[in-house]
Image 1 (cartoon, rainbow, N blue to C red):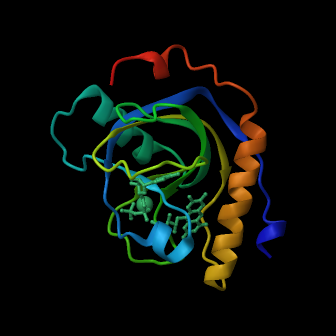
Image 2: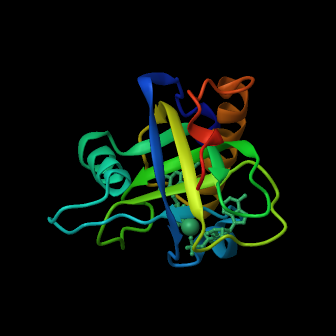
Length: 169
Ligand code: ADP
Ligand code: RBF
Ligand code: MG
């Protein structure tokens, strides 16, 4: 049962600061699951990259796939608040149809509008659990909801961001 899924926050020290554009996925998050996830652009080419793009690539190349707890901000949108988020990194094995890993953040906040194309900042604080394949869609949905509750609780009060969220987008 999803409720019995073991979750524990394995902290990243220091937290991982990722900045990138929000791109389109399959549109499945909101439509099928009821949880929108802002998908971070990942540069899969081998060539030289901006430092920000390189950081994202390093993160997906070197960290375990799974669910992470993060602080998140849409840096250049009308709502630039810093909110808690549950972030999925990997292959979405429940669906099994991704050609590349994704980094997708469910921000635990109601936004008035979509923010495709905007700059998303993620301060990834810790690892929560591996990605799983569930017996049913309901199982996955229950697990995601419980991840949100877990991240909400574990992230606690304001983030120590070292000025990350205060910079120009
Ligand atoms: P896609 O497959 O294109 O990522 P989703 O159904 O996952 O589509 O929806 C994600 C989009 O929803 C985000 O890119 C963002 O523009 C919007 N959005 C609105 N509210 C949120 C939120 N609380 N968390 C994440 N994305 C949100
Ligand atoms: N996908 C999986 O295949 N297995 C998972 O265990 C899983 N856990 C997730 C947990 C959270 C908090 C979020 C936001 C997403 C998770 N996903 C998981 C990804 C989900 O399949 C994906 O966001 C949707 O398919 C929309 O792209
Ligand atoms: Mg998404």
